[in-house]
Length: 266
Image 1 (cartoon, one colour):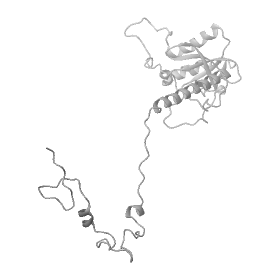
Image 2: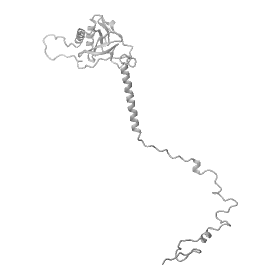
Image 3: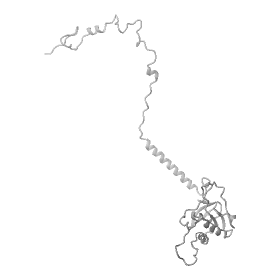
Image 4: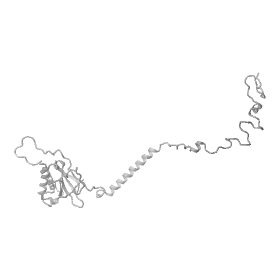
């Protein structure tokens, strides 16, 4: 997460009005960043109280400030404009924030808590004797983080957070995932039945029986007899049948000519 030009490192304290972070910019010392929540950022009175607390600080304490309504007052010279970011009409205004010099001492954290208490009026003493219902700001239940915008995007230009160990781990993880995917593909498709190729489709020439008919299938030649007439030198089919002896028993009492009768058994 980045607010303005500062990368968030850790959270220090929080309240219904906002959150205090430890942050840093590229090539600069750590700072203490106060960022208002969505509820306080949507209240003009809360934004005015926050701006008044920042304008009352020393100029060396305030490193930078930004967000809606923070370009006015004595500390307007510390305001960092973000108008060059791509903005759509539906985008909400940025939540107010301020980056303060941070020494790492508990006193610096206590100062941030004082600023947030002045915004949400938690520790403000009541006038007179308390009576009636308790007082509570209308935005106390809205503790969502305030609107912030990151531009340009940190990937792939930002490389100060990824070392060689992270890159090596990512590379090995990708190899492992690819190996598992190949192994699963082999296990799934190794038992597939082989599909035989389709039968060849006959061509039009073979289907129609093309080509000139052979002499044997057509009309007889001039020197050969026709199929309907027996040749003069060969016996006809009837004659060859009558002259050939047959071992079959004739039907009835008649026997054909030239066929011997079989012996009868007693």
